[in-house]
Length: 248
Image 1 (cartoon, rainbow, N blue to C red):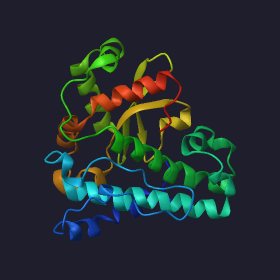
Image 2: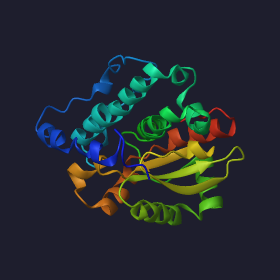
Image 3: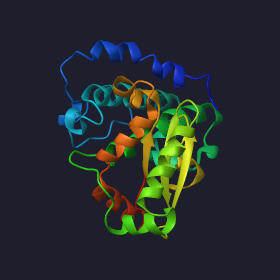
Image 4: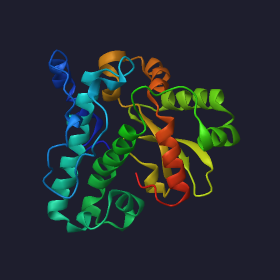
């Protein structure tokens, strides 16, 4: 586990004070318009919904801080690294993560942490939405039944995996080109992309994803999160994965 770098758990949790200060501020989601231009090859992805769209399950203040502070910090870190290592601008993030061992040693920590954080969060915003939730549909529902024992068992196993993550990390569902699903968890901002696996969906269990609303109640957050999962978007990702077109 990497702990001594600019993108460590301690440094990101330092945003907690700012989060509390902003909790009474107007709830504005920068995603209503295009994100501010980044200085470098990497930028925040454009999102389709407002900060308050996922309430009451994820509060607007958490969503705003998570996107404009935490994800933006990863973008800044990548772009800073790219100033001294032009190779980072030559490939998309999924290719950099997928062949991280080939990168110069001096830049691997930045790509692992900031690059993993960028890829993980880009996926995270995409697979949630307003008016979502409920049971999975379509081909994804069939795959969950076939590979993960059905939706009820999958939910229980996914939540249990999220609770077992020590400290901070993610719980993911990966998918291969045949459509086979698997449940995996990762520490920190590690991505299954680094193991040459394709990410179908995942949930962020870093404290900054839920602490303003749920405090230390990660189990409650994990259960509530199903109410914002966008199964239509996940079916799109499933089809793209099987076609070899899914990146983050």
